[in-house]
Image 1 (spheres, rainbow, N blue to C red):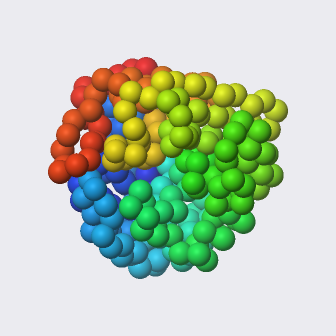
Image 2 (cartoon, rainbow, N blue to C red):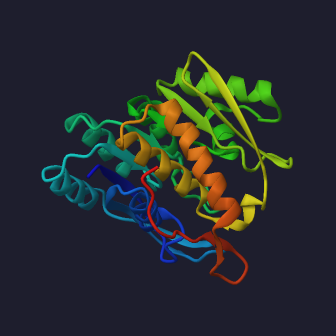
Length: 264
């Protein structure tokens, strides 16, 4: 069985964060292990508070697992602070981790900071270059590249800036574009690929779409797909999930109902 190491925060609603990542990987028939970076007080509607775990404890968690299991891919989500980011960089180098998907979690949908300013700088300047693919949404891409994303030319420029930071491949998730289409884009430094899909529901009202996207990518990389093929496969699966498998679980928010498994 292919194995993915998830490094992320804990969401008690299990609609996002590491617990949700494990559900997505299980759906793909991939084994997932989960190392926590932070505890949160949140539900499907908002993040109320964040408490990062101790950096040394995080390191001990990771090393104990990495000495036991050899992983085919890594999915990085919420880091919380610079201490966790620094220790993660150390781990990636020491254990020669591969197929690393970085979902650069910066703020929650409810505008709660999920990484410190120092941690964000460390992510941008040192962590990104160690990763195989980065998957920011529009807001995260704007912050990382200092580029306002209003049209396709802006997207191309943002991808160019992300690649210049040292990552091999970049995906910008466009579900928040102010249009009836979700415009997701991919770049590997040589080619720029744009995909359009009609929105069936506003992603602003769905909890955990970003985690779902990056988890799918990591699962497909673990199963041997290259980054471009994993991008197309992820886009296809998440479109299906958004269109057909929604479950209202909170007072005003929607989370994805993960049913069954797939060998796709």
